[in-house]
Amino acid sequence: MPELPEVETIVRGLARRIIGDRIDSIWTSGKPQTFKSSPAEIAAMLEGARLAAVRRMGKHIVFDLAAEAAPVLGRAPQLAQRRGARCGSRKPPARLTSQWIVHLGMTGSLLLMPPDADVPKHTHLVLRLASGRELRFVDPRRFGRTWVVREAFTTPGTEPLDVKLESFAGLFRGRKTPIKSALLNQKLLRGIGNIYADESLFRAAIRPRRRAGTLTRDELRRLYKSVQKVLIEAIAAGGTSISDYVDSEGESGLFQVRLRVYGRTGEPCVRCGTCLKRIVVAGRGTHYCPTCQK
DNA sequence: ATACCGACCTGTCAGC
DNA sequence: TGCTGACAGGTCGGTA
Image 1 (cartoon, chains in turn red, blue, orange):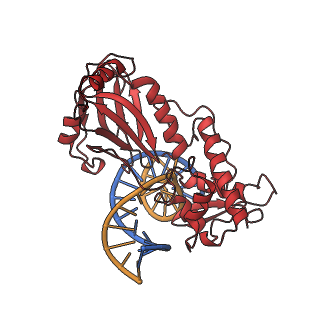
Image 2: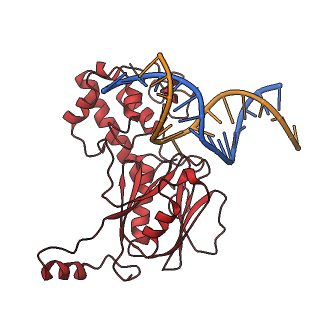
Image 3: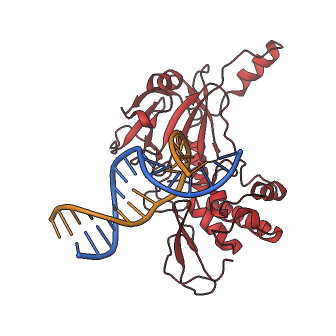
């Protein structure tokens, strides 16, 4: 379901609600495709671990797991203990990094619920927390994935909200692929998906099929500004709410982002009134204004 | 190396 | 009412 702004919204919601909580036990569905680590491995890493931090990396959700501390519910990780350990010995105690990774795919959601709440169809992973709540990973279409790692997780690609204009422009130099495909390529920029690719190209007045390497300096600058503006606005609005989007409490996004081209095939362009078109680029439905976008 | 395309899944909706 | 086909926010692996 989610692109960068939706994942960011979910992560912020989770950070407020579950950091410091401990995982008492877990349950996994029998669907092997969903799990990139074996359910046994996931259970071994998660059960008894404390959720120390959660952050977004592209469209991935990354949870830091802390194995050693006794949980203090609803509080931040205990800094005093760590400080003590650092002073006590020159070398900090060797501690394996362990992280729990979730990618929501097209239709995945993470729901924090009371344990007596109905367990929806297509629930694949349930974490029973010491606070008495459950964190559930639900994903009807099963394009989502979850797994655990022992080293610091990382992905290729640059965060579109951190990248500088020069690096941004460099990503597209010499590429013959359509600019829309390049925007969707997570090895270049991580986090942009179909909706925000279309919206960014509309605001930058660039046709989705333009070869990436043919964009002028000015077009690259416009695209850079548009991408960041679109993402920032969407995050401020709490993500775009389409059919099955829900945040970590199961609420629909309250503030629907006003989309200007995505899903508006046949409607008049907000800028010039021309009938918006739908084509297929990189196998994805692509929406644009044939007059405004060159 | 790069780029396209089908495959992976289930659900929903339009049209007949 | 019920069937069929198109389409859906993503990624991967095979092929050209």
